[in-house]
Image 1 (cartoon, helix red, strand yellow):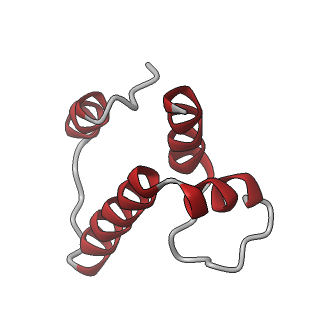
Image 2: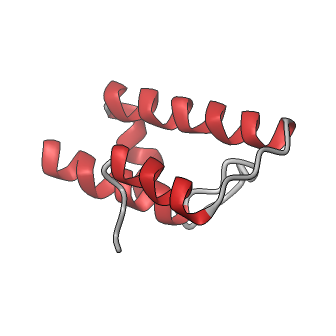
Image 3: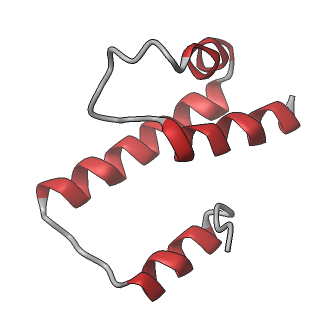
Length: 77
């Protein structure tokens, strides 16, 4: 299951739109979230971060963005 979770989390970061709950193209993610509490928590935490950054109009430079992605294990550079 962990490799599936890794794949789903990568898809979430690449494709998931936290502002559009009506997306139909991400059925695989939604189906996985129904059965995986860890990934549901992951999405909820990401959603909170996105909302916070949008609400407070927080901007970070590219170097900071890269460090954050590396810490999250999501950096592809």
